[in-house]
Length: 283
Length: 66
Image (cartoon, rainbow over all chains, first blue to last red; front, side, top):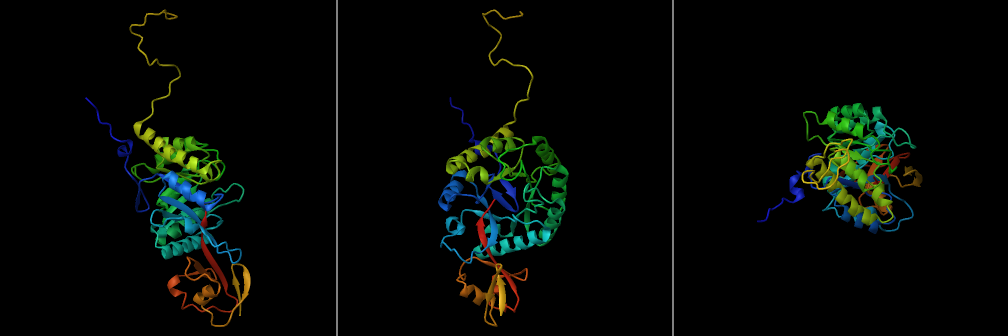
C-alpha cells in the first residue's frame, strides 16, 4: 500500500497583499547587481513575482542604450516602486506619484503600489516615524496600496497599520547590513499585535537578510513574506544565492505551518529505552 | 527661456511643451515621468502643458533598487 503525501505547496494558501494574490512569498530588489543579465537570472531563480525598483532622474548624458526595463519581463513581474532616498513625507509622496505615473505608462499591475520608505538618517537608514506616518496617511488617501518599511518597533508597526498601510514591513536589521533578524522577539510581538483578530494582515520582514537562514528564521516566526536585495545581489554567486532564497522562503514557511517542537533543556532519546540490553549509568 | 532640467540649466524656445522637450531630448517613446515645479504632469497632458521661463523640471525613470 502506498500513502499519497500532499505536495508541500498545497499545505499553504497564497499570500494576499495590496489587492493581489502572490504565489511566492519572496519579494526581491533589483539594485546593486554587477550587471543586468545577472540580475535577470537571479530574479528568475528566486521565484519572486514582485520586484522592487527605485525612481531616479533620467541620465541626460552617458546613455549606454540599455536600461533596467530592458531586462524585466513586464508580463511576469509586479513592479513595486520604492521611495528610497526620501527623508520627509512630502518628497516620499512626490516620488510615489512619479512611480505610479511610470508604472501607469508601463501598464504594470504595481501601479497603485508603493514601498514607502521615509528615512531619518543616511547612516542608519532607519525610518523617520513621524514622516512615515504622514506619508502613509497621504498616500492611502490618494489611493495607494502602501507597503511600509519600518523598524522592528511594535508600537510603530501598529500605528502604520492603523494609518491604513496594506502591509507593514519591519526591518530584521539595518538595510544592507546582512545581520539577519537581530530581534526575533520584536518581530514576534509585531506579528502578534498586527494579526490580533486579523490573521491575514500581511507582515513582511524587509531588510537585513544576509543569507538563506535569515529568511528561514523570519518565516518560522510567522512572517508572511520576506523582502531582500543585497543578500542576493552581493553574494559571491548571486544566481546560486537566489536559488537558496527560493528554498529558504518555502522551508521557513512550511516549518512555520508544520509547527516546531518545544525547546527543552535536556535530551530526549529518539530510540526506545524498553528492551535496551546494555548497562545504563545510574540505573 | 531658461529651464532647469534634472538640475542642469537648459535654453529652450518659448512655447515649448513638455512633449516637445522630451522629443528634443530623445526621451519620447520611453517611460519617463515628468514633474514641473514639483507637480506631476501625467503623460496625457504632456502635449498641453507649456513650459515657462524659470521652470524646474524633473524627468525620472525606474532604476534598480531595493
